[in-house]
Amino acid sequence: MPISEADVQASLHALVDPNTSRDFVSAKAVRKVSVDGSNVTVDLQLAYPAKSQHEALRKLVQGKLAALPGIGKVTVNFAHRIASHAVQRGVKLVPGVKNIIAVASGKGGVGKSTTAVNLALALAAEGAQVGVLDADIYGPSQPMMLGIAGRPESKDGKTLEPLEAWGVQAMSIGFLIDTDTPMVWRGPMVTQALEQLLKDTNWRDLDYLIVDMPPGTGDIQLTLAQKVPVTGAVIVTTPQDIALIDARKGLKMFEKVGVPIVGIVENMSIHVCSNCGHAEAIFGEGGAERMCKDYKVPFLGGLPLDIRIREQADSGRPTVVADPDGKIAAVYKEIARKTAVFVAQKAEDFTARFPSIVVQNT
Image (cartoon, rainbow, N blue to C red):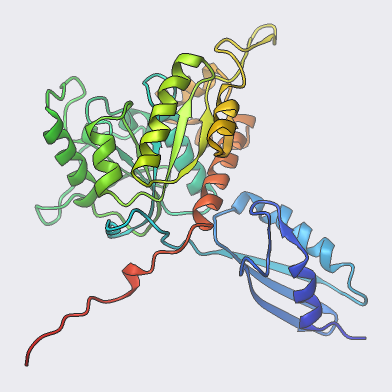
C-alpha cells in the first residue's frame, strides 16, 4: 500500500515538538508534505529560530515516519518565520523591529548585561536577526562587551545607523560619549535619550531587539514599560535573598504595566573551584526557582559563577562566541530558545501589515 500525504500528516499530528510541547500540525509548522513513491519530503517552518535543534528534530521526525509501512527515504527541510507579537495596548511597534525583549533586574551586579549580550548572541547563532539596545544611560557596558569602538554614522543628519559585532546590531549612549565622561543628567533627559536611541536608530529587519535595562524600577523602566512596545521581560537575579527581594520588585513592576514575564535567569548559581573542582553555592541555592514557583513564571536557566564568563565579556568576546560549543554557551542557547518559544506562542500583532485608512471629503 503506497504512502499517502494523509498518513504523513497523521503521524506528524501525533509528534510533539520538545521545544514547544505542541505537535507540529497544531503549531502550523508543517508547510508542505511531498510524497514520491515511498520517499517523503517534509518542509517544516518553525516560529522560533533553532539551528542547533535541526538535527535532533530531523531525527525525531524521521524516527516517527519510519513506523509507516513501506516508507523509504525521509527528507526534512527547515525554515523559520519570526512574527511580530502582541505588546502593551496603545503602543506602536518600532519600525524595523518585530519583538522587543527587556532584560532587567531589581539591583545591579547580578550579571544582567552579560546575560543580555549572550542572549542576543545566542538568538543570532540560532538564525535570528538580532539587535541590542543598551538602555543603561548612566553605565553603558555593551560597547565593551561586544568589543565595539567608534561612532555611529548618520546618513540623513537625523537618524543613526547601528554598529555591528558578531552579527548583532547594537546601539548605546556609550558610542556617543567618551568612556570617562559621566552622564550627569536628570530623569527626563535620560528617558528622552532612551526614546531617541530606540526610535531614531535605523534597525534593519530585526526579529528580536534585546534591551539591556539599568537596575531598579525608576524612570527608564517606566518609560520602557509605558512607551516602548515590549513583547516580554526576562528577569535576572542571583540566588541570594537580598537580590531576590529586588528581583521581585522588578517582576511586579512589569506585571503592573502589562508586560508579560518571559521567565527568570539565575546567575552565580554555583561556584566550581578551577583548581580542585569543589562545588559550592556561595550565594545560596534554589532562590530563583522558588521565586518562579511563587509567581508562576518559567525558570529559564542557571549560570555558574565562572571566571571565564567575566573574562570573555570583558574582552569583547562573550561566551556564546568565545566558546560556542561549551557547556555555558549551551545554557545561554537554551535560555534563548525558551525565550523565542515564549514569544512565538503569544498572539501575533498584525497592525504593521495594514495600511492607514484615511477618509477625505472630495
